[in-house]
Structure formats: C-alpha cells, structure tokens
Amino acid sequence: MAIAFGNSMNSTCAAPLWALIAFVVASCGAGSQNQSSESTVEVFSWWTSGSEAAALETVFSAYRRTFPETAVINASIAGGGGSAARPVLQTRLVGGNPPDTWQTHPGTEVLEQYVAPGFAAPLTDLYEEEGWFEVFPDALLNMVRAQGEPYLVILNLHRSNTLWYNKPLLQQHGIEIGTALTHEALFAIADDLQRQGVTPLCMGDSGIWATGIMFENTLVGVIGAERYLGLWDGSTQFTDADVRQAIATYARLLDYLNKDHAALSWDQAVDKLIQGSCAMYSMGDWVYGEFVQANLEDDVDFGWVAHPGSEGTYLLVSDGFTLARGAPNPKETREMLRIMGQRVVQEDFNLQKGAICARTDCDRTRFGPYLNWAMDTYASGVLVPTVIHGSAAPAAFQQALNDALTSFVVRRDENAFARTLAREAAMAGIGD
Image 1 (cartoon, rainbow, N blue to C red):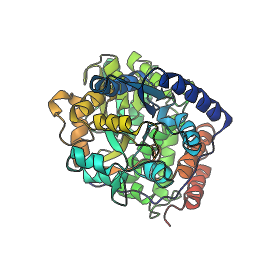
Image 2: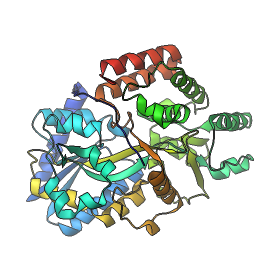
Image 3: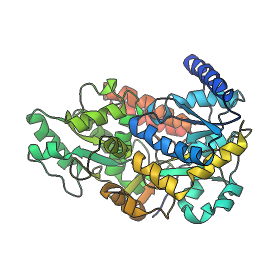
C-alpha cells in the first residue's frame, strides 16, 4: 500500500456576500442555542443528505449518552463537498469566531488552509491518551501531522473511484458486469442502453465537484496511479498525450448523462439510479450510504466495480474534525473528538455513511459485502489523493479545476481544458 501527495502552497478564500449573510445567520442561531444550555459544542460540517445526516447523528447520539448536559449544535450547511460551507467557515475563522470543530479533509486542505494559518490546535495529547497512534495507519497520520503533531481526528475512509449500477435494470436489458471493466466495454454498454431507451450514466452536478469526481476517476483509469501522482510533483503534465486521452475519454462519457444533470445534486442523482431512470453512476462510495437509507441489498439491488481502468488504485477521500485554536468550548470539543475516535462509534458512523473505518481494529463482521470489498481494496491498492476533496493540490488549483470543468462541460474544448490546467498547475507551484 502506498500513498503520495503533490506539493502545495498557502492560499486564502475570499468570502462573497452570500457567505457573510450565512455567517450572520449561523452565528445568531448558535447564540440562541448557547442561551439554552450551560455547556455547548458546535460541530460545523456539510453533511446534510439523508445518509450523511443519519451518520452524523450516530456521533451526536453517542456524545449525548455520555454528556447529556451538553447541547450539541449541528452547524451543517448544505452543499456537496463543502462548496457552500467552506466560504462561511473561512469568514468565521478570519473573523475570530470559529466553530468549536469543523469538518475538513486530510492532506493539503487541513495542513495548508487551517494548520499553517494557526486556526487549528494540535491533538497530540488526545492521541496519546486514546492510543490512536497505534490504531490509525501511519499513511493517514502523515496526512494530518505538522511538525510531528496531529491536527485532525480521522473519522472515515471513502473510495472515490467506484462505478455503481442498478443491477436489476441491467439484467432486464441483458447486461452483466464482471469484476472489472474497461472504458471501451463501458462505452459498448452505454451505446446498448441508449438503443434500448435507457439513460446510461447518472449525474447530479449542480455542484461541479460531482462531475469532477468522474473526471478524476477517468484520469486515474486512463493514465494509471503512477502517472496520476506525477501530476502533483510535476513529472506528469496536463498537456501530455495520455492526459489528453483521459480528457477525451471524459468528454465522451459526458455524452451519456441524464439531460437534467446540471439541475440535480449528487444525492438526487442517486435517487434516479435507485429508481432506474439511469443505469450507472461514477461516484464515491457515499452513494452506498444512500442505498442503506433506501434499504437496498448489496449485490441484489445494486452492483459495483472500480471505475474503468482503476482496479488497483484507491482514490482516497477521508473526513476528519479539528479542534479550533481558541475554541469557545474546548473541554466539550475535546470530548466530542474523543467520541469520534472510538471504535464502535466509527463502526456505527461508517455503516450509515457508506465508508470504512479510519481505525484498523474495527469489526469487519458488522459490515456488508460492499464495505468488506472496500476494506480489501484499501489494504491492497495504491492510495492516491484527490484534488476535488482537497488532499492532492492547493485550494487555488482546486478552484481552478472546478472553473475549468464548468466551462468544459458546456464547450467541450479539450485543448483549452488541458492548457488551462497546465497553466493553473504552474501558477499554483505544483512541481516546483
């Protein structure tokens, strides 16, 4: 198992007017709750879909059982991938009014955006008290350390490069998917489905990050893990022939999407997959959490396979929570983080979220076929970071990729897309 990360540099976010308004509303709401309890803890996240909210509630319930006198403020802001939440968070941090703890991603995001500017406090003593240095893998610990100290309690591990499919729908149309799939085989299936009047690929990219997931998955599947990692150390260029091939492949995939994709959120696209309005979905395994909420059965109601060409690669998306430096409620926050790191809490959370534990000692027998498959592929695969979820590259390049994708989905200019990414990578200092 191997993992690597690209170089990065510090960046800041400018908060638009709507973010300032949201901040004021959130602050007022928090204040009213503070008056109703002697102690509180505010948890800031973007988990609001059915499965996300259910998973987060398992953590809150565990906390309330232990600390019933403390009010938990769920400061979640809707918007997949944190697209709406992060500007509000940045405004609060810069303004000196941090939430007690907030959701973020390991790697570049937490270290560059929150640790380097001094917004987050180290958690070394908590890790030592709980024995977490022994139960969290070194590869993950290295993603949350600065000067040897950890700054994040890692709650889950997602695989981003998964292709989901409505199994009964495909069977109805005489289509079987095995344990691996090439892009050409996927195109053949998609053409067959279109001839039969079925939309081949689901997408909900009202938040552009969702189609960005499919782009990253395609990129890894076409150029391979080693060349993909080279994008973040400068040994691979976005204008290289194999990267251009990946862009062309991604462009072709866009031809098979549901026509209303731009109006839907990622979880609304999952609903279309469940209903059989479309057949397949290239998306992270938070999709599995939505299947759990719908009471679907693994390998009966739905199937899965690695995104074409990416079988040996685990495109890692992980979430964790910080301790704010100067947190309004540090004692309560530390206990919330302690709860998040507990084995049973991680099991309960990830069964709802559609992820696997960050801890290495979770009980596999509690997890079904898909999540056991994910555990096996995590253990044996090459782990690679993601731009879309903040671990591979600076925030400036992440935003540039989102902007370039927004243009590309409409214009399909492959040369302009490649040149833009190459230019923005150079401007972000990638490969320096």
